[in-house]
Image (cartoon, rainbow, N blue to C red; front, side):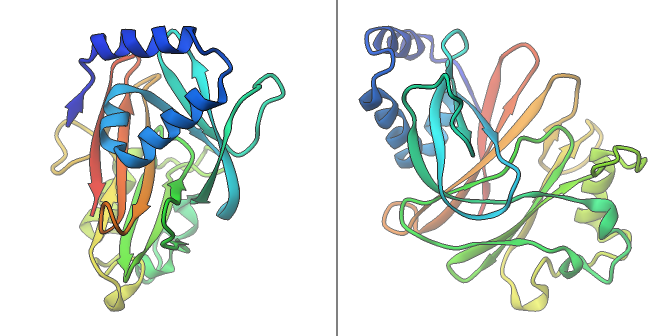
Length: 244
């Protein structure tokens, strides 16, 4: 995990921003930074993502959100007060209720989103406060599912660490062949975990949240790369690559 400890660069970014408030070129340069060196960008800048509907989008908006905490945002709509934002081609993975597939014949019962490869495209999904993210390679593409333990009613009795255990251990009727069954490639789950749980994941606590973003480049990365950024209540954050 890479932790943010870049005060010199942070000060330089703020100084640059103060000299170019509302400058579309500055926003474009920061987006290009995210696309060309995503892990480094996420170690140095906070990123928030919001968007509900799934599938291919002509664009999301990339914008500067919070100068004090150097936060950028990817949103499915542009707020009226935002003057400059960069339109970004994305595929968005919507959140799905884990309860609706719990006890199914296998992970293939989960309706995933096919994240189709296209140079320069991003994969987005709304922020995590207890959900798990399932990923499986499908040739040059990835099939992904954002699993919400609570669903719309918020009364399922399921917990974030609980569904992560079931998804990773084959519980509740789920097998480990993944979202695509035996035809799929590597399958991974990244979700909320308790300190006693094995494997990698993010910690669940009040006011903590986690963001996931994917970047595709055949030339630079050899395909899709998916990253997680964990944001703690004290404004510290860290980032890691979670797929492949």
